[in-house]
View (tube, rainbow, N blue to C red):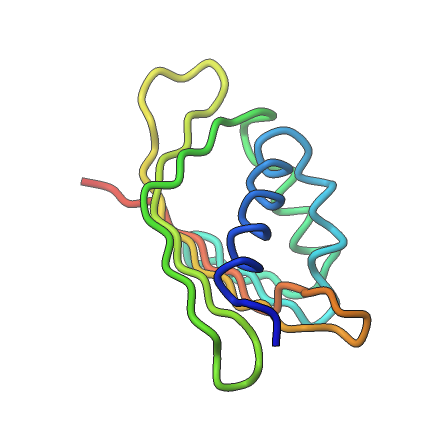
Length: 123
């Protein structure tokens, strides 16, 4: 198996780079069986997930990762947990968030997101 730490950090650089400016570009990371829970609402499948991500109330956002934890999963995938801050374009107060990903390898030696959970942290 590839080094989980290296794969996880490369994934996060790619994911948050596209999340910040071109969320439609994230489509290749999801498949029909992928699941997203966003603030308690559940979305399944590439099309539904990308529709949710592209209809957020901002187009561009700066993402700051404060903590990152990465572990290999017993199923052969990679589990990633992130805390950080989002700064939507035009806003002056950052939004604290937590996000967890489960990545699984594909037969072509890449990874897809099977599970994605996102929460804003209030308070």
